[in-house]
Image 1 (spheres, rainbow, N blue to C red):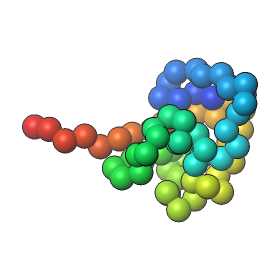
Image 2 (image 1 turned 60 degrees about the vertical axis):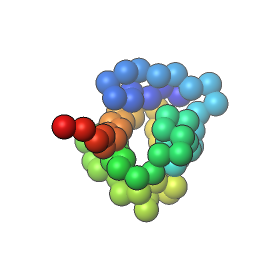
Image 3 (image 1 turned 135 degrees about the vertical axis):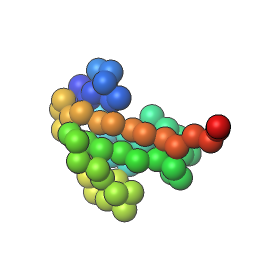
Image 4 (image 1 turned 90 degrees about the horizontal axis):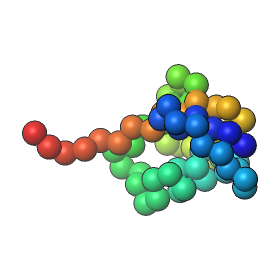
Length: 68
């Protein structure tokens, strides 16, 4: 499966089935301060486990950072 994550093409032999599985691979342990959009549509955290991924989905992962 090919996914575009933060404008970078990534290939997965054993593709994650859901957005929740992908987030475990891409941002393990991070759940707070994270926003995700698939194909320009924001996906609430409550829907990550039920959101299926498709080949060539464009996924934007944004994490909040502290600083000044």
